[in-house]
Length: 314
Length: 314
View 1: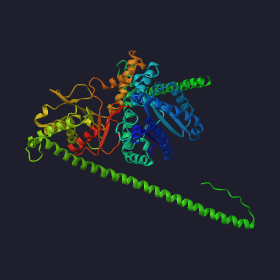
View 2 (view 1 turned 180 degrees about the vertical axis):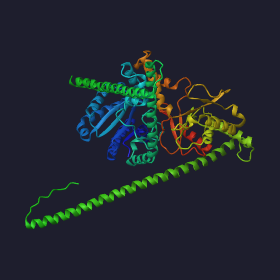
View 3 (view 1 turned 135 degrees about the vertical axis):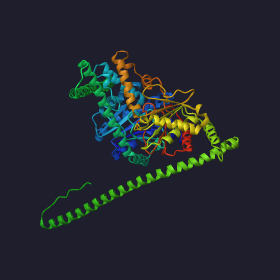
View 4 (view 1 turned 120 degrees about the vertical axis):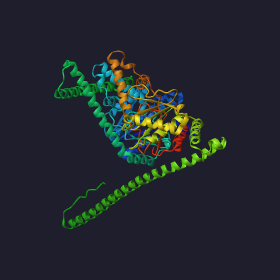
């Protein structure tokens, strides 16, 4: 069974057109379908779900549609906060991924509250991508790494796939095993491009508000059929990554030795020791950088929350 | 299962009653366990049947897909032949040169007949044993139909390691399929190590690039390291980075446009590490295999692409 499933919930507007109702109703039905799908996933022991709720590109839509979606978000996040006991009972941890500074301030504050309230829950995880595109996420990860270099915490050569993994919004989640896109489109549309390189991609023609339990089962079956081949490819990639890191460390250690050795030939024993020392130091640097990064991220939410509490008291 | 606890009175007659009650309780428990066990067996059987059915469905579908495409293609060719001069565009009993020339002209008109043609096609070979001739055919058909950029990818880096063999095969098939006009349909091979083209040609009609997993995430890591070095040297600040800057760092000086279409060959449902950054809007069309691939199958995939609607978030 997949442990982490990602959904691109496409087709709300086409569904509304099909039923000759307002677009907003299509989006509301879509949200209800999301709640239903989460229940199915829990029943099937799928503990982590990531959904593409709102893309940065969607800001290009008509103003009334965007406002309608923001209002829907406002209502749903407020309701989530009301149901905190229920969330605690089921151990649901809610994370919101994206460039939250692009959203209205009151929604940012609601999100901060929801995220902080459910931060320590660990039975199941819901990641909502809101004001998100994968390219922005990757660019942000590189920016964070550059910030680390600016602060003197890491060197440019410390930047690796592993480091960028940790700098993404999804650093606390494993890569999705399965990505499902509804409504028949066969593209990724800037969603989790980095994280889904070895995920099973399932494109289903059903519109999102019409999604059924059997559609989900079909997707899971397809994942199971692909599992072996994907696991093999993933393992190959992981092996290659380890070798690349080792090679990079070796080069850096050799450079350092050359600088201190003043052109004298270096014996293998010394080279090996230098490599081990360099690797240990690099890992130490990366560790302290990641701790600082986590603190920076937490501060963003706690500051928003303080603002929320202050404005609520006022 | 909730069991009501029974209070036990240990007197003579009551002991007999207790014994009888215990016996009854054990019988019921045995029945329930048996039922659960049967359910588990039945569910496992149903799950295995679904697996087998899906396998069967996939095999039948891929067989049908090929026969239906072939059938459609025969109708399409007859329609084209009816409109144009039969002597030149007929497809029976012609000399070798005539066959090549009518193939060539047919392919060009096919390209023009589509609503939209991709600018850059990525050929993703997700199969263990690649056949160079078939891949060369695909590349040449792309060129003949009017596609300007073609990339060839496999997730084990086989094509990258056998770059020259693939290039030779492409040139051979170009001569074979396009005949005298092969000079017009000239090819520029982009070598990855240095940005100089392998072959200088008179007029560039198509660019072919061979890619491997190293061009994916490791490519992004290299661009990130480059930016971090600029930050270290205080030529840039971390906050200067945006999506466009990272995009140009990734593209380099001889960058190709992003793939519009990824043709995936094989039964694995994944991008297997193919250019994660660049495929954000690429349509992913799957074909069962590249072995003995026919022009008809290839063109059907292009027709499928022509029918896709991109809303770009709007």
